[in-house]
Image 1 (cartoon, rainbow, N blue to C red):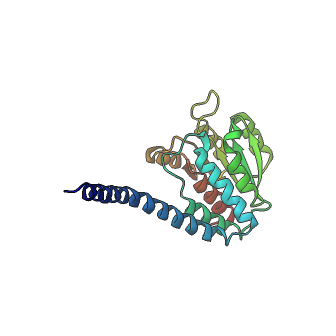
Image 2 (cartoon, one colour):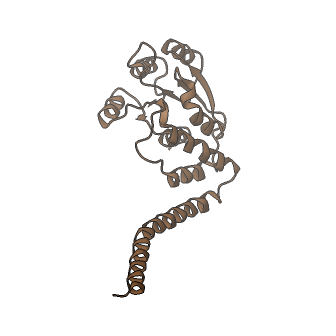
Length: 212
């Protein structure tokens, strides 16, 4: 085989190798662009409040929920956008929620998303503080961490006290320790629900206040 022929064969083989390596990369880029455009097309129909709600829920999901743990899966942007779309036409003005948490920085994005709905909050950093608040104010719902300070089951403690002081008050346990066993036990003890998802928390609060 002549030198020019060998060079041509080597060039052809090199071209085929480059093509074989390039196509997966091109396919990934196309998929990413299509997903981005799909999400963007949904976000485009959001009003200003819906865009802000979507932003805060996305931030909360990426942070990892109430205990700021890295998420095990990538947050579902489409679900977040659809949640924001539904919420953007609603108002929670006049409703008040008791929120028990001793680390408010971990729930700042969730608070901002709900506050955009007109929801008001009363915050407590301990169970005794929350009990005192329940004795003096009426709430539409309560959100509590599971573990708080020296009380490893503060969520259950608040549930017990809420039954005495404010029967019928929906209490949501917002914690990173969710499993189906824990959720079942929380409901058995009287919780409205237990979740570690900021999007699920948002939906639960909206549903409670809107009576659905």
